[in-house]
Image (cartoon, rainbow over all chains, first blue to last red):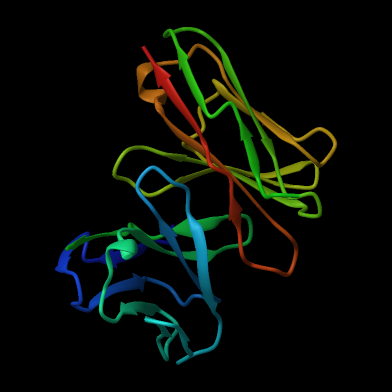
Length: 109
Length: 113
C-alpha cells in the first residue's frame, strides 16, 4: 500500500536555528497536507499543497511540493520554542488520510 | 460549532471490558474518520464514514472493534473485550466533500489495565 516516509525522525535544534523535514512517497500524490501536533495535543492543519512545484509560505514556515509530486518539505526559519511538536505530512486517498511517519522537533532555548 | 468533539477525554478500563467512545464532527461535514495513535507514533487509520455509510475499514480493526454513524452525524467506536494492546489515543476527524482539510478532535485516551 501507499507509504509516506518522513526524515528525520527526530530533530533537536537550538532556538534561532532553521529546521527542515522531508516527506517522501513511493507513488505520485494528488495533494499533500502538513499538520502539527503539540505534545499531548491533536493534529492541527497547517497547509495543503496541490500543484507540482508549489511553494507556500506562512510567516516563518515554507512549504514545498516537488515537481514530480512525490515529495514535499517543510522549512522553519529561526525556530522558536513554540515550534516544538511533531510535524506530519499527510496525503488524502479515496477513503482515508495517510499520515507520514512524523518528525519530532525539539527546540532548545 | 466549536469543532470536533470527542467523549470521554480519558477512559480507564479493566481488560476484558467493553468501551464505547463518541465523536461529534463539525455539523456540515459529511466525512468522518477514526484513527488510533500510540505514544511516539503517527496516527493509524481505522475507519471512514461518508454520511452514514462505512466505506473503508482498516485491516488493523479486528472483529472486536465496531464503529457506527447511524444518522450521518455523530459516530461511536466500540471496543469489545478490551486488551492491554488497545491502550492508545483514539482520534476522530471530519472533513467535507471537496475540502481536503481534516479537523481532528482532542481524542479519547484509553488505558486498559
